[in-house]
Image 1 (cartoon, rainbow, N blue to C red):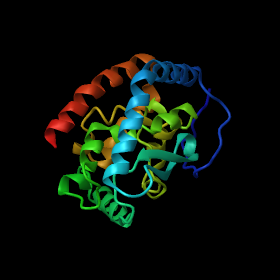
Image 2 (image 1 turned 90 degrees about the horizontal axis):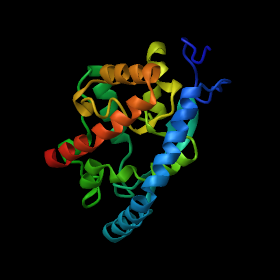
Image 3 (image 1 turned 180 degrees about the horizontal axis):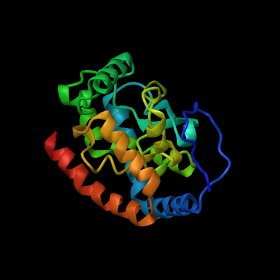
Length: 222
């Protein structure tokens, strides 16, 4: 059954069919979240309290992202930057990396002064992305999938690379456990397209298992 158009599409373009594999993926997401609830709930409260102590402002950071088939949604994260942080800095940094085909390094690696105390640690551990579990519950994201991109990043994807959008974006994914910030934008898109066209429950479980040592290496590296 035809699921994805080869041609370019605009955000919010709607689709008609939902493959069985995505239904199984959804069941896996809900099942794993239910199993993880005893750990997730305390962590959510602990990180929320920590952010309230070290930085003034809201605990949750909301940002518009592009999801499955170009649909826009509000992505949730724990706030790791000061409330007065300049957002254009990240956009400029990303534009430079994409155009020059340099590895997708984070501004954190250069000592981003916009971060709150221990904000870099929250990012390295992935704790800042815990609120995205609510996006998963709402069906806007999956536990495993391509990274949800921003509207200004969306414009850089070629029609063939937009195959990455045929699956829901994920908290972790194939690119995230296959080099991540050591890869270029083009290489990231290749990982995402491969995952979108070959994903399975077995692959999702393997990616989840590989995520743990990757996070540990990130913590040690920082």
